[in-house]
Length: 329
Image (cartoon, rainbow, N blue to C red; front, top):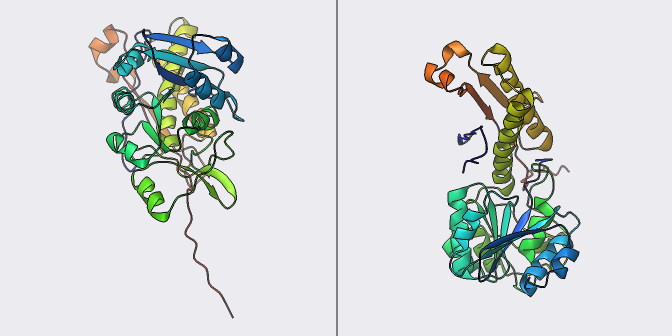
């Protein structure tokens, strides 16, 4: 989704196989009589607002009680049956993770499907049983959590993991969430949840933690979040270049500025853990730019530079180990 107030378009295309900027603000979606958007900087502001429901305040409490917390929380009010309309209306606001104040299957499905079309936000849906994830199956921009409704695993997880530097952590083994109790499952139950690509909060080697770090498509959350960060960060940096320079000339000097700006962002992504590393220990990305003589004259006349491109290798993480050993006598 393009920002109508931006002069920069970033197109990311995946090749398979192949910010700190904040993309961690949660939005709590709550049903109301009118559509609305509000932001709150702390829990005190949330609790002082008499118009907010108990359900909203419970989610906000879970968010602000974590060790790592976002700078603010958004509350988006939607009319009955129109959660996607509200999400679209406020998609340009400063929120990134959407959660429901109260789980309603129809709202969860509508918001999850909206995120698939939008592709720039991530939705976390908490269901009491794995069967609730079936309608959302394979949605890349939705995190599916299986946990009792009395606790707010969704709010705690997006606060603790989502508010940290994008690329600095994998969402598997996020531990010590405040107010979230590890659950126990039979092997059959746990297998069913893994098959659905759901996430639960369990104890492994004595430490309570998230069981996996994937979305319902099987893609890893840090990969999705990192790609979103890259797009937003590049758009912001290139827009800032246009603003700061007063005039970016359509000549080798101006093109070099564009290349340097893209390279700087990719290096930042490498430092944060979004961009991978070659076996030689170098950042795994490449930036290419074309000179004016190689470009379409109509684009030049319109002052649109279409000669920049880049590729980068996503950073990976180790989520498991299969180690072989030999015992000698």
